[in-house]
Amino acid sequence: MTWLRRGLVNFVFQSATSGPIFLKCVDASGHMADGGTKDAEFIAEQTLEVLDNSELLGFNFKDHFGVIWMDGASNNVLAGKMLESLHGVPEYPWLCVEWCTPHLANVVLGKFGDLDLVSEIIAEGQELFEWFMNHHAQHAMFVAQSDLYYGGEGKGRTLVGGADTRFGKYFSMLVRMLVEKPVLEATVVSKVYNDKKYKDDKIKARILSPEWWAKVAVVSKAVSGILSLIRMGDSNKPTLGMLYPAVIAIEEHLEGMLGRLSSLSANVVTTAHNIVTPLAGDSDIPYAADMLQIWGDYAVHFKSDLAMAAYVVNPIHHNANQQANESVMNAFYRICRRFFHGDDDIENTLAIISLQLTAYWNKSAASFSQEYAWKNLDATPGHLWWQSHGSSTNKLRSLSMGLLSKLIGAGESERMWKKWKLTQTKQQNRMLHDRAEKKLFVYANMELDKQASAFDPVYGKPGGSSDFAILKTRALEEVHKLVLSLDKEDNR
Image (cartoon, rainbow, N blue to C red; front, side, top):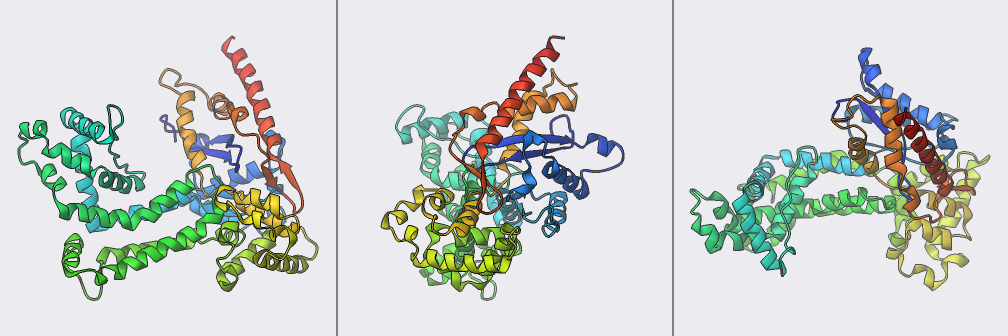
């Protein structure tokens, strides 16, 4: 939705190494004017049109194994279910639709923030933020103390505020306040601050209260893993292979919070009880149990077949004993059936994959037996590791490269709204959608030639791949054509 309140749907192709390509933007205004809505059926229909349109940059998307990422709006969730139901249809055998990881994590944090005890802490933090960031004098004093603390003018840091549509920012706000606690304390005890003699200065009392900081610390610790998940999903790096273990780590962390306080000293327990209210029944931290329940309600969306399959072949987790996890392995073989849909004898293919997977785990294949292959795994993207070391297990290699080259979010589609501001302004407010879309295509794709030109396969049938550079080149060619076309229109 732009500031002109048009109902728009962005379609962006995301790649592991060469950056996003804007494909098209559908204006649903006409559909809505006729009595329709930007509903699930409409979104699913437009998505299939993009997949079916082989003329779009001369690339046939439906012949390639990929993932459709959508945000968590109710219409998008329903559209995703409609599209996912087509994966058995011959035209769309590979189809995978996933809920954008940062969006899903933000929904979870929004539910956390609705808990009474947590919302109270957030409200107090937001009040503190506004005290220092919305008033010139208090802000100037904070900046001066921050520069002093970090070693010089201009080296200081600022606070981070919350945002109603990005629930994670409220928790990021609390985390940053913990980091800036020494600066905040120095500010409110400084002579220049106290000379102001603010009446009923509850902000000063809050900053100097160990009990309040204990509350902030507990909440910040509870959500630390989810904030990391948002950062992981909002990057342009292929992190699908890291998603499942990150989700399991968050679960273990929340479960650990339920029993952690019982082992602490009596004084600490008393302080912790004050954080949340007296204990009820057998619970140690009442809102930790609520958080775990909320997480459990949404965790199934994180633990998709795709995420579990990528976890199986991620070399960083080579020794994680995935073969002992029945649900993970079942998910892996379901993805195998999608990926190798074109094989005449799929059962034979699965048997070959099983043998190759065993060779990978045991390091018995020649390409896995070399010691150098297992060094610096953190520095090598998983799909490139398989490209270099999977030559002796070709089928597993093509599957692994296809999985580990995937991103886990729709962040670039969201960031297109910023670029819309370049195309439609208050001075250019009568531009028709067709022309605005052309300008957006230019703005969004004009810097593709500056992106890394490393080989980035868009995986199709097993054993075959196409170079992403071809698609990028076609997008740049289209940019040059549109620039000339728009210049002619402007000069008429």
